[in-house]
Amino acid sequence: MKLWGGRFTKKTDSLVHEFNTSINFDKRMYAYDIKGSIAHVTMLAKQDIITKEEADEIEKGLLSILEDIDNGSLEIDGSFEDIHSFIESTLISRIGDTGKKLHTGRSRNDQVILDMKLYTRDEIKEIDHLLKNLLEVLLKVSQNHTKTIMPGFTHLQKAQPITLAHHFMAYFEMFKRDRSRLKDIFERMNELPLGSGALAGTTFPIDREYVATLLDFKGVTLNSMDSVSDRDFLVELLNAISLIMMHLSRFCEEIIIWSSDDYKYIELDDAYSTGSSIMPQKKNPDIAELVRGKTGRVYGALMSLLTTLKGLPLAYNKDMQEDKELVFDAIDTVKTSLLLFAPMIDTMTFNKDTMYKSCQNGFTNATDVADYLVVKSIPFRDAHGIVGQLVLHCINHHKSLDELSLEEYQSIHPIFEEDIYEAISLETCVNKRTSIGGPSEESMNKVIAINETYLKNN
Ligand code: ARG
Image 1 (tube, rainbow, N blue to C red):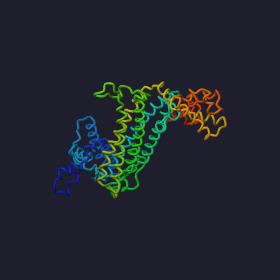
Image 2: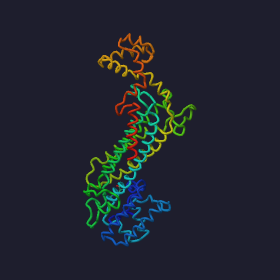
Image 3: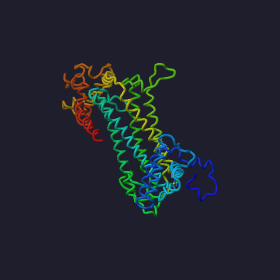
Image 4: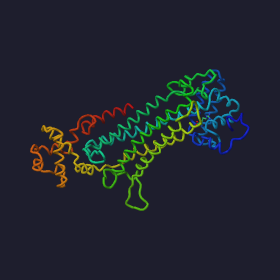
């Protein structure tokens, strides 16, 4: 059953076989393996390395294998070493000797990296699609909440008034960067490695550019040793996925805080929360917590792969087989997380009144009182000190800044006039911040329009 049994006189130790084998996880690449093999034999025939009839026969055999695996009538046999040997040997058992020509001018080393590239290209597209879906949800929520005032935080202490739209569109920017990172990775890795052989190319007159065209690569790799040992794109992908998870995790943290009893800014839909086996009143944000938790395991995959690759000499080394479980797991994790996250956001309800009230205490308009004084020609540093005194006065008298009487204001500084109330209303605080990127309705509408165009074009 071994592809390489010829020079061996003994059977592989069974534990060695088990340790060495990758079929239980690389089987998910079967369709890509077959696609790559078909392109390979098509080229072999074009170059007269095998005959057209042989190529057709091999292609037919491979397509029958693909169909049978797809429809479940052919089970991938876990006793094979890897998906490549399983498919090649199934082909030989189906079409006979012609099948033995499939591997002409090819090695599993260039084959496996081709499979990984074909697989990750599709997964990158899928992740991007899920990110886009999330962006659409974020944009929709934001459009509905450009007037929903809430506190913005620094150090998790109330800082200045913002809107829910402003808050959500911050995440929009993060996930937009994630998409552009995926695009970069795709561009950089989109070169055909096949034709690199085991490490030193092949003596057959192959046409790599032709295979690249057949498989939709933008070109061919330029060094066969690098091609078979390059796993950079997987590290980059794990890094990009880690960043997506980090963004999701930060968002989850806020969802968890916001849905807590003391905040109650939001309520998660029943379909996206869970209960407790003992405390009947509980409604827990488990999904957000799990996404936050799974972020750790994705970071682990990134560190793991970097560490595996560190110190590997050129060219292929079996250590590289370790890339698969890490990458597959990280991809599965980020996809499920995104898949759940978007509808969780889409179905949650926002307690606008609670958010507004929360913004009314905590002196979120203190900066605006200082700015008011600056407009009245008091230098900012002095204004800051005056407002500090006002805040202290408020704390001592259990009042907010807009609950102070004009007399109280004037007792701290005579320059205050009746217009102070209008100047520090939460609406003014938000809507005077009109520079682009700020929370005002006017600037949010501009940013939302820019991002609508972005979503149409990307
Ligand atoms: N399962 C191997 C991997 O994932 C395939 C390549 C095997 N090549 C070899 N020379 N043993 O890397």
